[in-house]
Image (cartoon, rainbow, N blue to C red; front, side, top):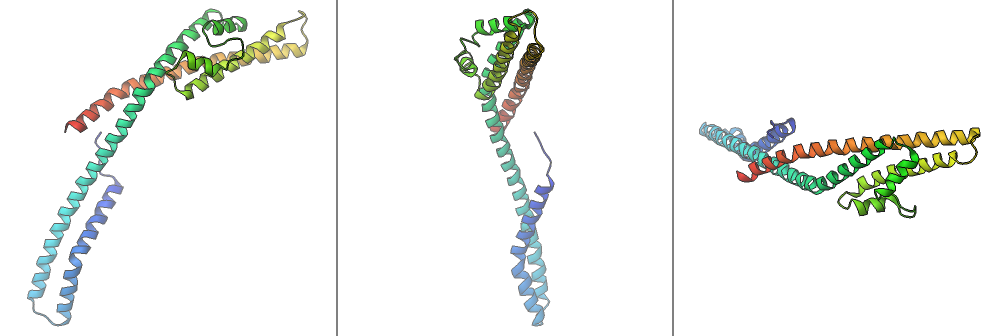
Amino acid sequence: MKRGLTTGGIALLAFAAGSTVSFFTLPIWIVALIGWVNGGPRTDWLGFAGGLIGNLVTAFVAAIAIYFGWQGIKRQMRASMISREEDRIERDLPGLQDLAAALENLNYLLELVGNEPDLVIKILTDQGYRDDGFTAPIDLIRSKLPRVDDRHRRYFADILRAMGTSSWVAQVALRGDLNKTLQQKAAYDRGLAEFRTAIAQLSDFQSLIEARIARYELQLPKFRRELEQYFGE
């Protein structure tokens, strides 16, 4: 990716050129000033002018060298950044693909049973995301999806935990007499609302992961081409 010279680069270049000119021309200014004070011949001024021009040329060449050196450093920094990003994508992409496939399958099964709390719990148990209740969801996910990173595992586990808790609340509220009290009805409605929220989060999570995979699969070939161009020059 080519970029123009920024304001910061121009300022740095101007500072370097000014410093170089000052460094090389300061002795000439001092000698010429001493000669002028002492009433020296005109040849001193000719020597001063020639030295000044020579040093200006030297400063210009130095400024050009600094500019191209800075461009090289910027390209090297970008290549290093792209290389790290490429490594990260190659490391994360397999786990994301596993997670997307698991979420797609789970959301499909939940849709088939109409997102009913009791049937959903059975599906989670059959798919290995829920057991007797003594194993944390994140441990089950780690066992089932070992290539998924911890950040996505935790988010997935939080959704499953909310889904299990809210469905349990809804089922408990339905037990007993058919003539439910207002308190039982409120508990059921609250549990069912939280359960549906968790279901929606699971679907949104799948969309998020699939969008991230699509972005990574688009970026990865571009990064590889740019690195090939950099190291091929």
